[in-house]
Length: 313
Image (cartoon, rainbow, N blue to C red):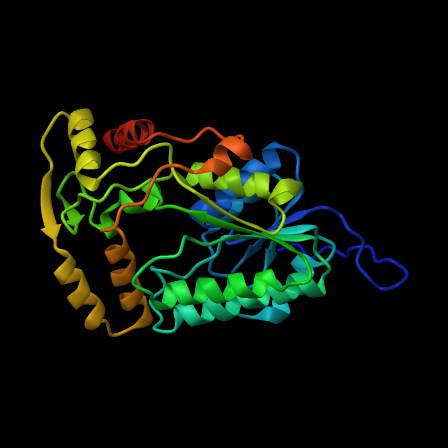
């Protein structure tokens, strides 16, 4: 990993280089943020753990991203990557894949708070933090996100908090019960319309938030261009695949029982997230018309690309 010596001013403060640090750079969202930043000419530094996907590191470095080994659970490792940078974009999260019982507290809580503290100490200009809109019922993952948001609002640097709706790239996958070759789980009956958003669009919003002065100290809610129920999503995939897809309904009562019986913060949070999916979310996001000049991926375009990828495997 690269640990370049960076120039310092006479007063001991690091000179501003304008580089963007991406925390969570080897994840699905973080990697796309890195590549979009590089495509517009930004210098990019990636914070990567020793256990990060080697293939993702190779892709980042091939695109000119400077990789620094570190871990937000080890705050002392953050200084080399933050020194002299201008902005940090934090997309890192342990939920829901980290198997450790305390992963949310360690990563989404204390780890993200360490990012804020390190950014302040390094004199960075801005943090772009990827979170999600307030949801009911409450759960540990949400509480961790809100604690970081509260800390950001009192931080000694600018912040932009992003509140995207549900990621199509996550919800339309087997771990969330979406398997067109097997069956699709309809949460609460699948009748609550959601403004599904593509990860690629979230990455584009994050990139704009890095420099846009209009977004300073703002919380930006956004979603896809239209709202669709799970049943409508399944119908579209059936049309594209030319065949029926089996469905299974998980009623809200079952999700409530799942939440009550949860044996870890991750299980409780997953139940809370699934319960929230039984409540409609609207598609109107004025920020797109007034500030964000980013075309949003439609459900039809995403599903078409998704089914093409699956059929080519």
